[in-house]
Length: 278
Ligand SMILES: [Zn+2]
Picture 1 (cartoon, rainbow, N blue to C red):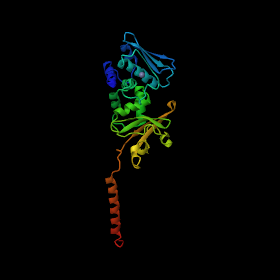
Picture 2: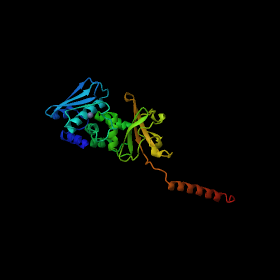
Picture 3: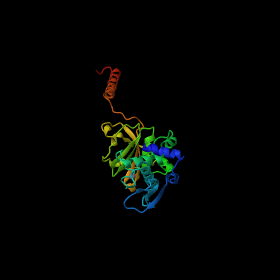
Picture 4: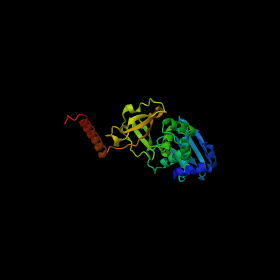
């Protein structure tokens, strides 16, 4: 629903590619102003008539993508939450994907995500390319969006089995799986420090044990994932892309039986070679 409102708005105003805010704020009767603020990152003050209003964005937000997401989030409140005269949203409210879905902040985030990163256009640009953080960062540049917002939308539309993971102080804060990634990542658990070295180029993915990320595979030594990661020191965080390039499967009793049978065959083969040995 929230996503559809953004889709419809882009469609009606014939917006393609990276959003120029004035193309949306003007028709809606909104103005955007950067202000010095200690209390909020973004705020919306609706006119008393209910139509039009002013969006305030904290000047001190360092990252352009984050600033754009904040503006889009406030436009979301304007269109979705018409009963509120004013909204004031802190850093913890905006792009906080641990909120419940019924939370108005979550609704405004979903709207903002689709307004800045249109699903259909993203799919077209991704085509058949393999998952990598390079691809995610190219998409972020294309739509002038933050890496965190882009990785979420990427996994939302990706056909590969992958997940975006946001880690702060060695703990998973959220993970965002694609529809074909049916696994639960260790949210809240402390990760092995070596796992987040991130000393690889963004084009590359390294192989890691699936058990490092997915508790359900703790007994499976052979199950692996491909991992790309990038440090984001401003947020004391690390953004990770996981790709199950081979389906992750648990070894079944049947697999174990087949292995035993293999061993038997090897024994009988030896007996054939050395008939004297009984
Ligand atoms: Zn908000």
